[in-house]
Image (cartoon, rainbow, N blue to C red):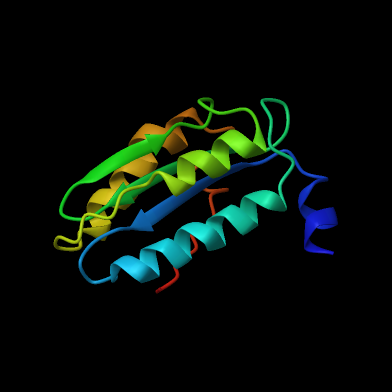
Length: 120
């Protein structure tokens, strides 16, 4: 049911992933696999759902942009390559990077963006 609902929309999905020491290494792996399962439910492509990701610890980094990968498999492989840093947590930096580097290139306006935060 989730798969059917998600494949009917053209959206942009931006993941902001905590890889700091507040999240243990084995939990980051579980989060990566959760994100992969979400991507499995999306119709990924340049004219379908585009996916981007940011990860943060003390600093934040763009893992990949919305237009960098155009297949589900490429997105899943990129998510699995997000490193664990284990340093201090700076979610503000992660959200800033998502906003100014990925959301600006999104088909969504800031008002349409729906933040979702989960604790691992």
